[in-house]
Image 1 (cartoon, rainbow, N blue to C red):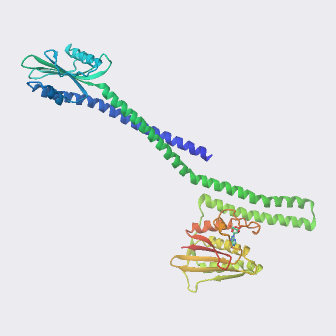
Image 2 (cartoon, helix red, strand yellow):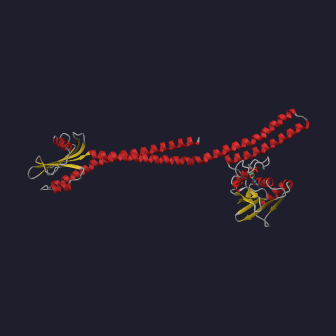
Image 3 (cartoon, rainbow, N blue to C red):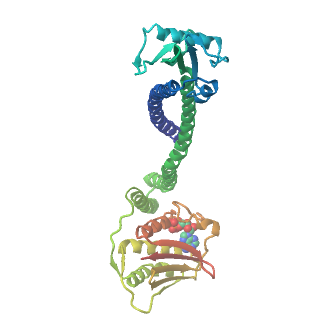
Length: 426
Ligand code: ADP
């Protein structure tokens, strides 16, 4: 499902950003082509004008001067002295170009298509126009006549617009490839970005699925026991019936406590863990909690000790009920996974860094490879050792509560064997 969504999002983002890129580059290309076309005409007319003006000042026309002063190598120039072609005229021209130059001359001399003609004081004539030659090539052309002492110097300077077309064509090809590269880069970026975007959602979804699967598994067992007890109770009588009903009741209580834990976690997932901080004397809270577990510890012959600071410590700003819940989880685990005749110590320390509470037992201990998982939902190191009431949700709830207090909780090995749970509050 995520792969499909990932591909869909990548394609959608690439399509949208690609369209924007294409529209922008086409607009740029349109404006740039327009500008180039306009510029080519104005550059041609200005350069042609300058050239003719300096040509007018030459009394003797030399080939070297012409070769040096021709405005641009892109232009073709033909000059005629009293109608006779000058030796300067290019010999390397293609026959089609020669034909087109002749057509240009006719175009102006007939005078029927002059666009921009002006007469100088010296009676020289300059005219600029565009025309299409027989070969189908379009030109900007400047026709001029300059009166000289003996007769008249006629000339035509032309600019092959194909050069401009070629320039535009190259620009378009370049733009096409630039767009292609741009879209490929966008595709890769979108692919990477959407994957990163979906990752937390995917992880949450996976966690939810695992949670639901584990929860269903945990609920199935008590439910099966309840159903079989109830059906057996139907046909039984007397003490046997009572025994079945009592088992069903116990399993219902177990289910109810599991559901409470699950609801707590579900609420923490959807709304975050809600805490109501008040001023709490942690030493008193610790003593109260130990007192509550005293009898349970005695059952297992476990010595339960509270180690409190000698000096009075300032009250802690935390949720009394929730911190007591954390202590209950840790104490209950300490007794469950502690050894007969062992010990369970609860200590409180206060420093400038805050409060540190440790719950230490000399029980089974937790293997290193399991330490990173024990705060996961429904995780049990050894399910066979766990009591029926232990579903693997306690430490997960404890961590949620401590994190809601912006504190930290960690597990360590007890030096003499066993486990130490340590949490900090500010
Ligand atoms: P549970 O309800 O099963 O105790 P927890 O989340 O509280 O679930 O604990 C997860 C697992 O971590 C337990 O099943 C147990 O294997 C291990 N564990 C927790 N506390 C201790 C402890 N004090 N000593 C040894 N193992 C422990």
